[in-house]
Amino acid sequence: MKLFFLYILFFFSAQLSAQSPGGVSTNLQLWLRADAGTGCFTDGCSVTTWSDQSSNGRNASRSAGTGNLRLSTINYNSVLDVEDVNRTFSTSSLTARTIIYTGQTNTSGRSGCCNGFLGLNGDKGIRQRSDNVDEMRSNGGAADNNDWTKSSTFYQNGYGNSTGNIFNSTDFHIGGGARTSSYTNTFYIGGYYSNRYFDQSTYYGDVMVYSGTLTTTQRKQVESYLALKYGLTLSNTDGGINGDYIASNGTTTSWDATNGAGYHNDVIGIGRDGNTALYQKQSQQTDDLTRLYLSTLSSSNSNNAGTFGGDRQFVVMGHNNEAINSDGSTEFPGGEQIYSRLEREWKITNTAFTGTFSIDITLNTTPVTASHLRVLIDSDGNFSNATVYSPSISISGSTVTITGLSTTMIPSNTTRYLTLASLNATTPLPIELIKFEASKNSNWIDLNWETASEINNDYFVVEKSIDSKEWSQVITLAGAGNSSTKNEYSEIDLNPYIGISYYRLKQMDYNESLPIQTL
Image (cartoon, rainbow, N blue to C red; front, side, top):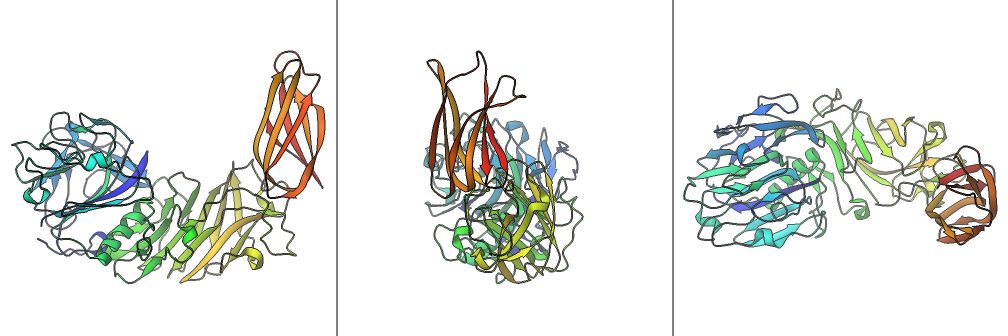
């Protein structure tokens, strides 16, 4: 499953409301939210009416059948499942110029039409269409341009008319549908006509329609609201403010993408912004390797018991895209008895936040010991002079939880850089192993392995077993000591067991040993 959010452009007139997407209320015609206005609060419950949150009263409804609410589906927030022709919502009296929505689907699954989902192939991103000019800005991959090609009967991205001009029609779709004579100034959400629908689960979070185009700042406000709520990373490809996250006042920047641009990966955040109804108390990367949250992580954002002390408070983080293990870096303070540190670094921006928060980090290593770990925090990303902290750290499996990160460590209205270090040889894994292979060759076994890096590696031991319980030594081979380059090793077992054998590779540190892979 992939995430995206998408722009399409069209024609409309407006009313103001107390809250609006990104605080942008001018020309707002329709605002649907799966976390409000469904009258449904349990997973899988049926929804027939989706109430408009813009105060314009343009509620979307089903004439037959229902949509299903899915709790905590995208970044711990609810979505509405509208997967086929029997679950289409519609609302009338719209003349749209700008449509924005968030959603999630598989990379294929539209029946009777095109592959992919509205030109995004399931990838997360933003697309804007204006006067037949397409623009793609996405961290998720290239667009499937076929899904944006006009035909004589319908737009392949799921809306259109027989004339092939989007500005001549006030009848339009998101989620599949062909132009027919039965269009009556209606906005359809989900499949509508014949076999033009998604036959696999398609989820909608926020859907909003404006009667005019948005300014650059307004667009950025809406994008930031959606990105923080649904755990999406804004594209920073074009530089400038494109990757920035800004609050509903249009001036407060909670994430500056050009400040440490190399950390603009898997950006997630928590925050409160009253003008835009944002109250995100927990967030996770799409792959769930990192989580950021108030209080105690809950099954859903709404169930998280944490609170913000004031409005327009945010904590936003991204990473440098390096490995979540040790590759031999020695960039850490001396005299602190630090043995190793993660290559992965996180940039964290605190905007007006005065409380405490927690982070979960899932390591690409064997289980580690919490008491061995320390948190390094630095102001410029060079950890040679970082401050070493020992906050509350716990471990479940390979997931490390750092609890109670405060303004002492990351002060309000500052940006800091964080990584994890160990005082012990076994935490994190001091060797990055690329491969370990054992293969039969005539009457012996060839043993081959490669490392990407090594720290304090005295020598290797290869052991074998017939039952994976009792082990005997096969060979020993000197290691590279400390190395940040690839090393290849080869040896032979001249006396293999008959039948199935197990082989185990151990790294012998200058102080102690560590099994690193078993075959």
